[in-house]
Image 1 (cartoon, rainbow, N blue to C red):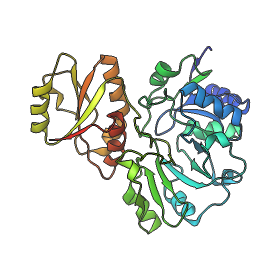
Image 2: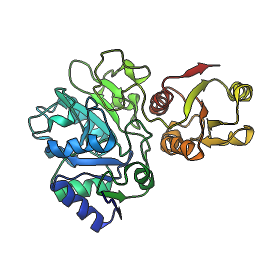
Image 3: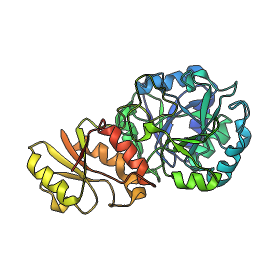
Image 4: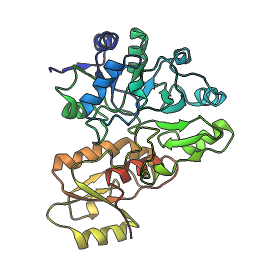
Length: 339
């Protein structure tokens, strides 16, 4: 398949909208990461996303809309909590898991009776949905298990020849996928951390939000993935990553004692000058938003360097940094050493 690489201008948006209506798939930027889009009501089109990515069928997709009126048919009810969260965070990087409606393609939902819905703020997404009239399902535009793409060039590396169009809208602003919260059942539950934090969700709802154990730990055997990004190994470069949890002095001492000719460091900005192995930085220490913006590009840079063994500095586990830690432990297959 020939892949057209097109700027996300008026012509590119019109082309994408036409492809969406015709049941085709394509890649486009959002404020979080680049995604592969297909009409969420067209099961055959949605199935092509799984084929292009090599994505397991039990990993649900998120449906993207451009206005609250588009929820009709996609969900069977709109809980009161959805109105509170939408008022606070939509359009923006928040996905709400709600009762599944009759019109959403079964392929989006991985056999679940729920569906994740979000309203992105990115103007390209808004324009494509408005011009096509289609809500679309979209996971990240990468080969399954690899780091998510935050530039069109990253998409090209993974997906050229696998889909007809990649829209180039420049680097993504947020850098990690949306926060996912389930508002089904008695208690709201955070399923995947992102740019919108647990504390912000609780403030908007005026109640406690439970935290899924699968955010910071592996899914238990037989446990169902109710959100994208809950799988055991995900977001991973080719290199074997181990997270080192401790001070910089402890980190450097460990690296110095264990380095080989094929060792590299994934460190915080400014630390690279104090380490004696090749380094890739992924943001400022203590700044979860900066780390999130750079994490996936940095993971891909490790592959570009050809690194085999990588020792990563450990981010925080709360606030905006929770999203970074959640992605990094999956990229490291949960290998964490407490120094």
